[in-house]
Image (tube, rainbow, N blue to C red; front, side, top):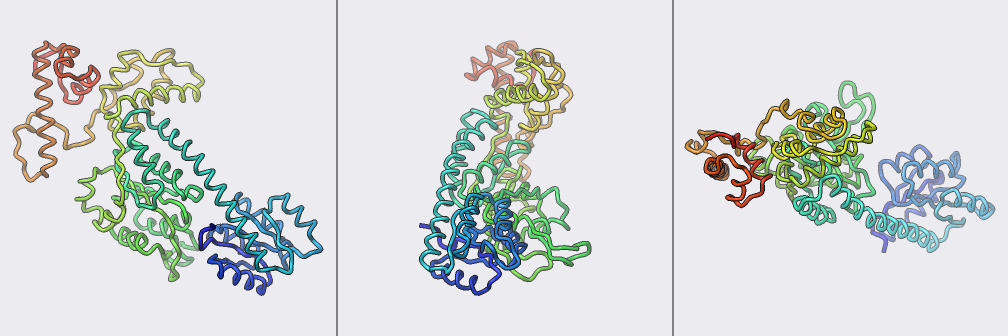
Amino acid sequence: MTPVASKILIVDGQKEICAVLSEYMQHEGLTPVVAHSEEAALEKIRSEQPDALIVDLRPPDMDGMQIMKGAKALDEDLPVILITGYPEIRGAVAAMRAGAHDYLAKPLKHHEVLRVIFRALNERALKRKLRRLSSQIQDESSLRETMGPSDAVSRLIADVGRVAKTNFSVLILGETGSGKELVAHAIHQLSPRCEAPFMAVDCGAIPETLLESELFGHEKGAYTGADKQKIGKFEMARGGTLFLDEISNMPLGSQAKLLRVLQEKTIYRVGGTQPVSADVRVLAASNHNLQRLEESDSLRRDVYFRLNEFTIWVPPLRERQEDLLYLAKRFVDRTNLELQKTVKSFTQPAVDVLLAYNWPGNVRQLRSVIRRAVLLADDMIAEQHLGMEQVSYQPVLPCLAVNQETHDSSPGGLPLKEIKNRKIVAMEREIIAQVLRETAGNKAKAARVLHIDYKTIHSKIRQYGLSAGRKE
């Protein structure tokens, strides 16, 4: 059955006809929206996103065919139902060939109006369902293609598929460049809202004075320079998804207004007094880990709890070495096409460098390094083409950075979890250093003693600043 409160836009210059049709629809739980001009009709399509359009083929002072063409340009799947008088049946048939879904002949009959409307709505819903099922397969494979084949990505895809079908707010956590916006896009595309817009806002890139206008819009004259009304991202994303990137960078005052929107599902444009519906699913992202975000003074706790109905952690690239080599090869192939080159792959020393490096910039940094390497290489990418010696290493998680003082230092008021992490890291470093001394720096032998693979010990040696060739 067609969902209750489906919106039907009625366009007719005769208010009596609009009133009759509106009454028919309201009795069936449908929501009529009325426009009496072509300009108003197109604006209603943009702002209200109706599920069907009823328009007179020849309304007074309007062109029904032109309205239909404008509607299709804004929403190509919008079913258009034409109203026509008996003498114009032939013209209605021609209009259907031009894209109309059906037509209603005057005088309008209650049961016939509803039959045509519900048939149009059901066909639209069926098309959306088929498209959504098709896109789910494509988007899941697309996420795997863009992120990699590792078990960590498989678990992430499972989480995305699980939460996408709900209307939960989702908090996406991960380091800069790890792919948080890719995950947000995938949630939207796999959700029932996939036909509606996906809008993204970088909360750290917009000045505080402009952020509220960007999110909620403003009325003409709201402030100096506001010479016309502006529709904000919440309205633009109506029915769809709004992605708030780096949510902890949002000013606290704006966070309070965001909380009200999340709770009440309405917004007020800056300088406005009329509430505007905000049927939007909100996804938010941060490069802080969960504990730091929860304890942070930069994010209100009530906003944090409202957004954190479900959390997805995007693992950093250094924890996904299987993905690292897959993505590196993928970037080589794409850059070959861009530069019209035939670089084949990597030398083994280059592979060792890629695996040993910590990648603080994650996938975004890997892509830049590989693009530069393809530009410089002729046949195979060698260690010198990567230019890794030019990239200064900075630990991404300060709580895991170790030095000689870490093992002996006082807790000094640190959280228990951080104290534990530091102790574990210090102990691991000491064990690896001891085994390297006992094996005279033989990394392969040390890996066998520790029951880890060669790639892992190579990465650990680089991470902890150890040397396999001399005593620690």
